[in-house]
Length: 85
Image: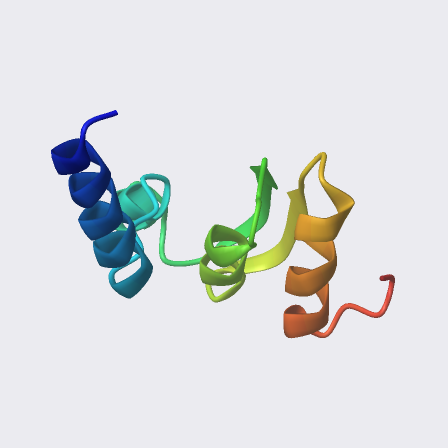
């Protein structure tokens, strides 16, 4: 890799650290617009950090967020007050 490419990667890494962007989060508002103001249940499959599940919880009676990575799912549970850890 040339010196210019290394510098470019370093600048992009610094920018991404300062302004993180999640391509899934980009669609959260669109998803919420497709749903009624209140609804019964929602499933967030591949919930990752749980951001969408938390947004859905403001409008649904019950939300289940699942992900294959137990490390990812432990933090959202704690933030949501779920004691099943």
